[in-house]
Length: 189
Length: 189
Figure 1 (spheres, chains in turn cyan, yellow):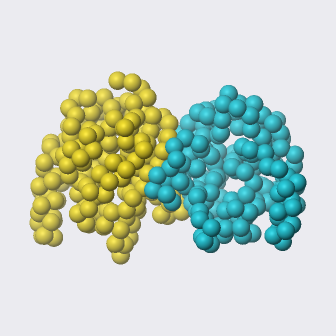
Figure 2 (cartoon, rainbow over the protein chains, first blue to last red):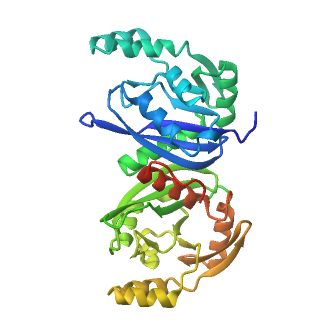
Figure 3 (cartoon, rainbow over the protein chains, first blue to last red):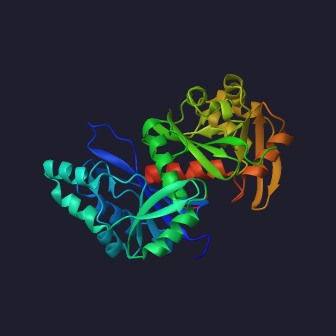
């Protein structure tokens, strides 16, 4: 695997309860080091359009031919706008890796989503597969993947987590989202 | 000089002729490598508030105690909203370095500004001092400085231009501004 592998990191921005939409930031990176582009789009808070909007964002990007993996910070953006990672992979042709920084209580999550009438979203989460634990210098995280083996996905995450226990493209997307929405990011993730 | 010197890079975002304000992005970097924070504010297109807004942005930032130099991409943001670099230095206590990527035709600029009734702005540009040419791997640029010698400023620019002929904090601020406003940045500066 080339150290300068091109990656797209995605993360949503902070939002308030009254917001209807949330800004999603994409960062196009060479390996874990150089940011060579920034993308942005919006999705509905707790909506169902994240998969579609991300497919559009990526398929319309001039960076697309170079992107070798899409890195997601969790499987949902804008609250419970859950991403269908298999669909995202299928319609872009690019492998998708989900970084799960803090394992959720799946039983509680299932109950909450069903209570909110969002049971279908839980199915999407289940379909993303059992998270695989990986150990980085800064701590443990879990990953899920579509269109790529978990073994290969682990290599990409390790290679791109150059600066912390989170891949640099996701860390940058997080800082940008916070800096744009709040006027100042909360520093290192 | 420490390679991990903390720098704040500032650049404005794309704007249309009908826009009244323009988004300005700040990136807080460790040397020329790691982005550890993002700031943002808005200034008036062709207005006079850039110096004030940047002083506010920096003085209210939690990163301020660490920032060892402010790097500007040209002396104006949002068209002709010219920054008083001596005032920016004085009111933040932080050295200011202006990167001039393409030397303007000063005579023409003076005429244009005077015709627009903005003669005072030309005085601010003049007060920033004669730009000093410096040679980087990727080409020549010019710099101006306030609160720091041009010799020391040159060292900071060379140290932080790790990836191109422009300091990395400015390059990142440019990519972010374009990516937020246009949905996609135009790639490497």
